[in-house]
Image 1: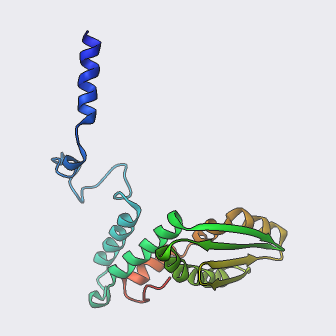
Image 2: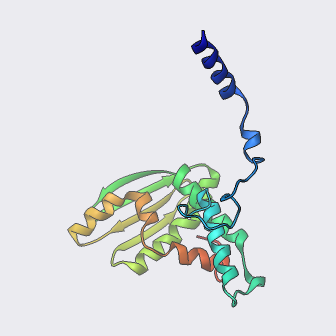
Image 3: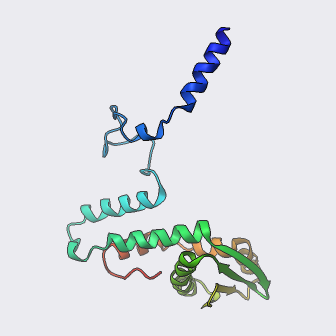
Length: 187
């Protein structure tokens, strides 16, 4: 009987709506915003964490040109990144020396792909010795990446569309440039 009562109490507790109360919870010591953390490095969701990090850098830089700051542009770019990573569908075809990826999605996804893939193709072309091209079609965006080196060809194929879009370490500086208003959101 005690087990049944305990199970019933647990079932009722789990069935209660807790989400509405989650944002109204009292913060205890150590949960104060801005307080140093011994273990956490990011403040939650990825786009929010990126925005938070950029704001921290801008506020710490006495040379920040505040009238040029474009956090809305950075947010739009982060939304594009999220759409590409979570909503795009890519079909990859192996070709001599690499691959061609054909990425598609709904209208918002296609718009994000159209902004991001050509811009990232330029980055890949400038930071590697790969042959890289991007073509925007009516219902897809194609990315073709090849190399004459067999080891690099294997790497390109293993990365696939999403790995290629995430490759090269320019993203943080790109985000900071968008936020500083040094480049418009477009890729």
